[in-house]
Length: 336
Ligand SMILES: Nc1ncnc2[nH]cnc12
Ligand SMILES: [Zn+2]
Image (cartoon, rainbow, N blue to C red; front, side, top):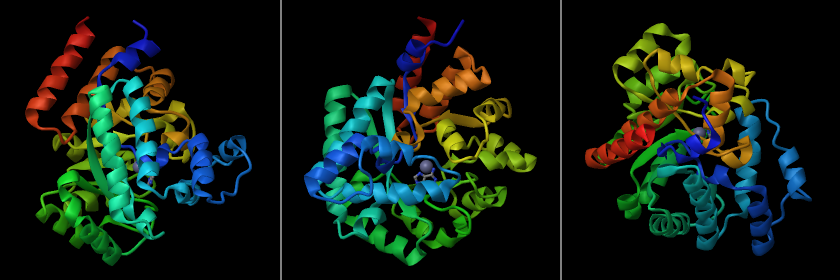
């Protein structure tokens, strides 16, 4: 049976790898620039989109951090997140665990509370409007030092009841997980879950460090783990969830062609892989488009899509009862 767009959109799924700053569409960037009287180096939405041609992660990050300059107020962060939740709901997302980069904002003089209050009000709205549940992941920027990460964790202290996990993102090469060993240990002591980007551009050894030194609960990307059969077998054996992002991988040249994407190989190797959108405004599509491209390029079946959706709930930080309820709804959808 073919895998239609309607089947993909109706498939109940969780999104586990989404940077909220990466959901800033050019139209909203322009609207916020005008509202806040912030200069941006683009004359039109078309010019912004034309600038989204990247040859690696750093190329993208330079433009992504610049885009975030238009975000100033509680309302801005609310509007950003509300737009994402509406799009995610239309793509069948019933639960989202979204990342935010506080240092991108606090380093510009925006208070931590401004960021999290705006996100929180959009989260409450998404729960009411879409019945969606949402968890927040605070990411440390790995190109900055560990002291800066500690200062960010300190700034987050009054808001820890709203934060589920910490993560590690930004420029991977040259910034191995071990650089953040102490701050991850402290986050664990505070009761937070731990995730980290590893094996996107970095070597398998960075994935090993994320496992053995950071003690992560979930691995973001992880593509380059496949270069090491021992590591791959270990990830499968330990049931580690990988948050894979096909359109991101193409746009950032982690794969040269979508036809070379390893998503089906990951499933065959027994990895608990999931499909996610990473930075959808920059990479050409939300989670539904990521499923679509994986299906088209790699011939995934409806059963594969169901496995990926199942993995998204199993890899979430939801309590067991909520996971069981989502899996039952997924089974009912597949059986219908
Ligand atoms: N794909 C990615 N890798 C690392 N840091 C990021 N920040 C936003 N998107 C990212
Ligand atoms: Zn990411």
